[in-house]
Length: 258
Ligand code: NDP
Image (cartoon, rainbow, N blue to C red):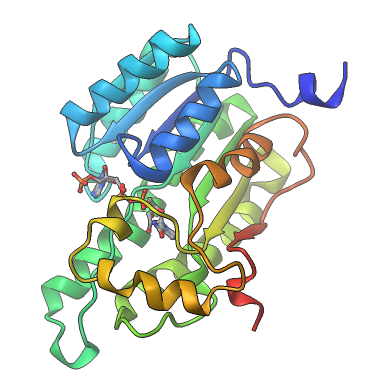
């Protein structure tokens, strides 16, 4: 079997949080194109259902939509149980849901701080933990978490200390889980994208006006596209990455190189 065939994900059962739109939808599309059956998990169930229907129709795979808020342990557990009930197993978890708030540190309320940490860091822990429990029993599985280049640098000019701290936490959480589960067949990696054109960036009133400044700072002079994160995630989900765990894949057009 050639390398491209080996990279296919035929029959793998995968859930994607924040899968209704943006990076989650784009990566879920690649998983479906590679032959996987999907569960699209999001708080926006209407959009998740549209995405699931689109993926199933275009790729002749199964795709279901599940409403779950990643900050709520009972919803995360019910979501993972639904995936296993539907598909009989869980091969890959893409723990990707996240938000950003741009608020100066001295003005940030406790609730604002907590919301970002709860979704971006605690949400990834709860989702990876629930997926991990199933995968450890199976003796196999791959977990991919979405960190950010903001885990490596402090983005300017926008003030986003809670986001940066949450994403740095995702990298160390990823490495910790990778070590704990390394001998038990469960791999845990993360991706650290640079600026990517999605609703989080393009339609955010506070971030949209900054795009020209970011592009001026970017070595490639542009933001990334969600499709430019697909291949690394297909690699991490599949069976050609069996020696890859505890790694953070920076995909940022060299933004963090200087
Ligand atoms: P989007 O806002 O386009 O999509 C995120 C999705 O996650 C939305 O559908 C959102 O629903 C959903 N979501 C939000 N909160 C929760 C929750 N508590 N439980 C379940 N789903 C939730 O964002 P992106 O695709 O841009 O971002 C995806 C991930 O990539 C995030 O973790 C982000 O931090 C990270 N990232 C993004 C970068 C970028 O430049 N875009 C760069 C680096 C990392 P709703 O819209 O209804 O709230």
